[in-house]
Image (tube, rainbow, N blue to C red):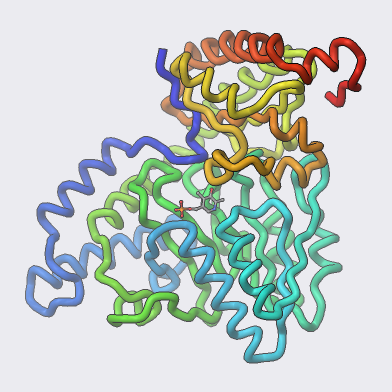
Length: 395
Ligand SMILES: *Cc1c(COP(=O)(O)O)cnc(C)c1O
C-alpha cells in the first residue's frame, strides 16, 4: 500500500488546480503589465484572483501581495516592520521559540543588525502563553510575530488574543498562517493581524507561490527591485498560472473546511489512539488544540530518521521533525522547546493527514509503525541499556 502522510511538508496538487494551471498557462499567456488586450486579459484574471483570495481571508484586494511562497511572505513582513521600527527607534521584536525557520532565520539576521529578539518559550503543550506575549511587549517593540499553527506538532496558537493585545498596544502583528489556511478557518479581521503569510502548496496548490496579506497602513518594503508589479512592492512578472491555480485550490480548500476538518480530525484521533499503544511513546503537542491532520510522536530508544526510511520501504511517506531539518543531526527546535530531551527528540515521527487519506490507510499505518519501532528497538544499544536498567526511561 502507498500512503502519503506528509501533508505538512507539501500536498498533492488538486485536480482542479492542475486544470486551472494549464488553462491559464495556455490562454492567459500575456504579460499583465502590457497595455494591449492579451495583456489586459491577463491583468484582469490576476485581479480576479486577488479579489477571490482577499474575500476568502476577509481582506481587501489591495491588501493582497503575491509572493513566491510562505518563506518570502514571512521575510517581507518581518523585514518591513523592522525597517519602519528602526526608523522610529524601536528595535525589539517578540516571537516564539517554535516558529518556522523562515521566521527564525529572518529574526536571526535582524539580531546581527542590532535588533533585540525575544523568543518566548512554549509550554509542554506547545502553545505560547498570551500573558507572556503581553509582558514582553514594551515601548521599544516594533513587531510581534506568532505563527497560527505549528508545522511540526500542529499546535494552534492563541492568535486572536495576541492580535487584540497588539492592537491595544499599537504594535504590528504578523502571523505565519501557512499551515492553517485551507485547513481551519482563518480570517484576518478576527485575528486582527497586520500581516499574514500563506503558501499554495500546503493546501493543494502549486509550489513557489503564496500571499502576503498586509493590512492597509502597515509598512511594506520590497525585497526584490525591478518593475512596478504588485504596486511596486514585489518586482517580477507575475506567475499567473500559479496564482490562478492557488486561487482555485484555496477556494476549494476553504469552502470544504467544515467537512474535511471533521473527517481529518476523525482519522487523526484514530491514528493517535492506535500509536499511543506503543510502549514508551508520547504524543507531542496539545491533544485538542492542534491541526486536524497532525500526528507527532516520540518513541524512546530509536532514531526518527531510520524509522522514516523503514516506513518508506513499507510505502508510507512520513517525516521526522520538519522537512527542513531532516538530513541534519540537530534535533527539532520545536521538540526541544516543548521540553523533550535530545535523545527523545531524535526519535520523533510526524504523520500529517489530508482528506485524501482513507481509513484503510490509517489502519495500515497503525499496523506498520509498531512493527518498525519494535524492529529498530531490538537493534538499538540505547534500548538494550534501557531494558537492562543502565539508563532510565523518560517516556
Ligand atoms: C511550509 C511553511 C513555510 C514556508 O513556505 P514555502 O511556501 O515552502 O516557502 C513557512 N511557514 C510554515 C509554518 C510552513 O509550514
